[in-house]
Image 1 (spheres, rainbow, N blue to C red):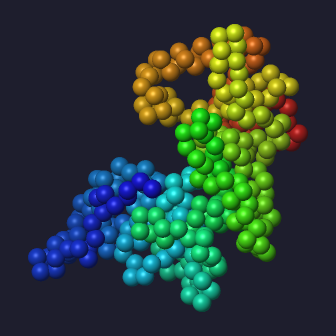
Image 2 (cartoon, one colour; image 1 turned 90 degrees about the horizontal axis):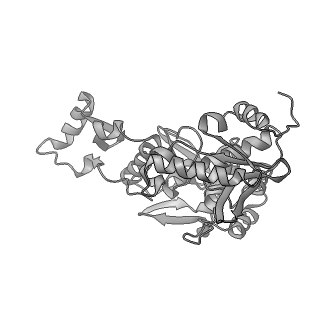
Image 3 (cartoon, one colour; image 1 turned 30 degrees about the horizontal axis):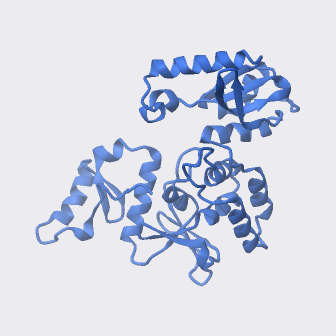
Length: 317
């Protein structure tokens, strides 16, 4: 987990004698500081520049550091701590799981989920108790939001083809965690997500696109297909429909605009490399079609795009 404590200031650490504790509240009222959680503040300018995910991570960490008793963070709160992605906005409430004897009444900015937890389903991350990656994926899969669950499951299972990183959880571990929870009231939802999740998805947009492809009745693609020509390796495609000689690539803006994704290359070099790659694929009599978030997230937009590229659909829209 990325250290989210940087910049957080806690009222309990301030000196009442000098008035610095009350100054935090005055700074918040003046707009100089932002009140993240009860007793936890951060500079307003820092908060305003944060991404939605980082704001939520700060909220969860602040809640953990200011609670009188230790709680087990779960669902979205566990997801953000583990680094699992979601689709859409992060919530503005902290989620914890509690035993039946504790009670499930939610108060303020804390949502309590009543559910039994086995010892192996709870881990410690930076001093916080959190549901394990496997349990977190199962919890999200039981909610009526299958897209977010698929995105989280794909990320947890992701296999690095170059062997540089291990998956966050193996399929065997996920299946064992699922079996241990049976009977489960939401077993049909959870089972559907586990059956659909894959190890080959390299990005959130890939997972979203694949989910929408099924929803709009498009043919199932081959994932991470390797292509070679007389010069050697061309690369791997995110999606491939061999019967239609079609290669699909879901490219978010960050691939081109974020230096971290360009591996030291200039934007011009990235675009040129993509052109060379497309030309080499074309020499294999393959057509390449690309889309971004604006096309991949709305199912109807993706349907129009891929039907125009030559794919059939079995659904009427």
